[in-house]
Image (cartoon, rainbow, N blue to C red):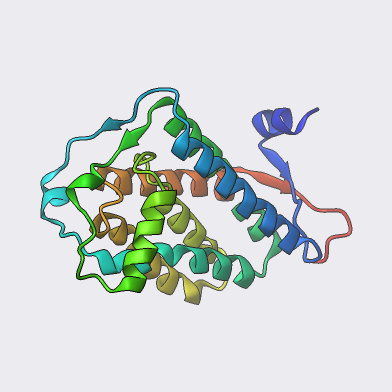
Length: 223
């Protein structure tokens, strides 16, 4: 029986990650995420569509300096992955995040959405470091792939790790993740609906991979 057949019929996945190989799988997950996102960010089966902006989208100001909060997600993911101590929990994290990436990128290919960034040029008064960071972000990250926000879904799903262990850290990472989610609006990277759908995607993947899925113990694993 293949891995896919086992997943669909028995809702069982292998525990691939052990203490010995956790960083190898961390690098694999990082490379997979980057490859999928950049591919779907720049290659689309259909023309990207703009979405109607809600009154919240219209009143939220453009605050370029919040780009630092926006890009803090890279430190965020690294910290959570390193801090996770329970290997079963880390396997749940790996499979849920990987599947989230695959499903989200499939949506981006089939139904690409875009944000009108041209309405929000970077101000000349912005300090040079922030200007360059933000400019490079916009050059690398096209305005497509808006809904659902993979930025938002990934940070919330990652924070849910601490609902199962070291629960004292959950409020900190949830608040940090919420700040990142808000920054997607203040940097004019996303619409409000992207944030809402991103959170729902995170909740759905948490429910399935943490509550519905079983994991076969890894052979010779030291938990």
